[in-house]
Length: 229
Ligand SMILES: [Zn+2]
Image (cartoon, rainbow, N blue to C red):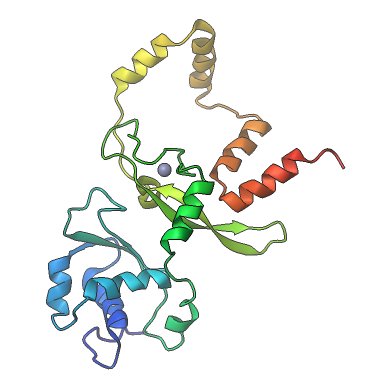
């Protein structure tokens, strides 16, 4: 199917912004506010119209989500619903932006920790760079009955962006190894030798538990608290 033209005036601004991203920018690429304004010179709040696309599963990162971007840059990360197709724009409309109080509620119940890597708000990453910023992500959870629910979970800007290149300070790692107690170092040596570490079932469960959104953590908490039936 050929894409309608983003210049086609029969579409609303939001749809035209979506088409512009698809045909002029392309997934994974960066665009600037200036380019956006140049494409839509008559639209007063084109930034805002474009942000509305997020309600339709479009992923657009600003510096907030991706510190590698410059102030005036944004990245078109991933296409969402094809809002130019009649009906598509409406069906997802309910999935609107969160209110400030909804966001706060999720962060409070997640103890202001990224539930993917465990970092707290405004903490520094082990490899330096800009300090963490927490945000709310929607995570798909397959419930026990097989149905899928989208639950809200706190995530840091890095985990939201994902797959970022990291640098590691080997010297620091080595000195930490040397600082280990003999027994700890011996255990580490066996892991290194095997190039792996088999976590126990308990540790695996703990790891999974730590990544769960609050509602799911609550369900696990109850399951764990229950005596054998
Ligand atoms: Zn994180």
